[in-house]
Length: 318
Image (cartoon, one colour):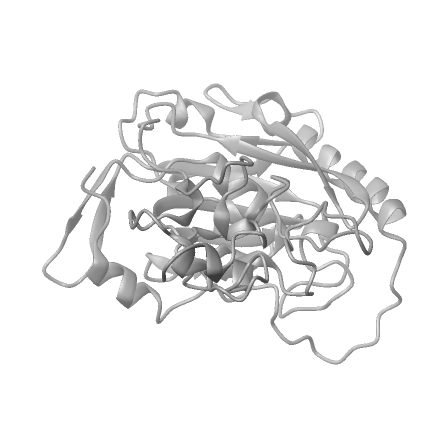
């Protein structure tokens, strides 16, 4: 792979998503907070109606184009008594549905995977990695609220709405790229998609510029490049610190119950905890075989030493 370019990563860290960031300030408007499960029922109906009444230029993504891009996607509303034009298909015919449980509510999120020729040996980002994309975000009434103007926007997926953390990992990055003299890059054969997200996986009751509360959101996007994160610098990639494998970082559900991602139950999730097992030895120093990966040091009890408080400093040199 010719994918990882440190120079682009450093440059990309200076940029971030605007409206798909989950921590943007709202406009101060007081909005009644609705029941999430009830809102999801309403959002599902809205999304299905949209998918059943809009078509896209499917023939441009039938595999004959060796390098499709998200700017080529055209979504059009089907007018009354109109038939779908040749070369187009209703969105509902090609969308993939994914079930996820967030905030104790079962959500359906929909997406199109449009590059039939993508290299499936290329990396896919995890929900907690940095990703470089091009994108456009718009509401169901086709009001664009954000887009990448220059491309190659680099952002930690954890800083973005839940929908991004759920859908983007379903796509592959570019198999190669070429740097231009002007500092931009041309990415070759990358993931291309559209996601259709309920408000509960977006901003829910919050108001954002161009986004009313309880808005379902649509994003066209290119997945160009990814960089594996280690948020606490402990030598364990952040995605490996999702201990229960649910695709998000969660606390243990109760005292004495270890069903989340906090090994020592100290209230600090492992991916930002430099001493995951609370034994007084920093995780990075529990890489006893020195291969740079503490997860490989398995004790006699089958537990990696960095997660086992019984493996203390007294047991080995650091």
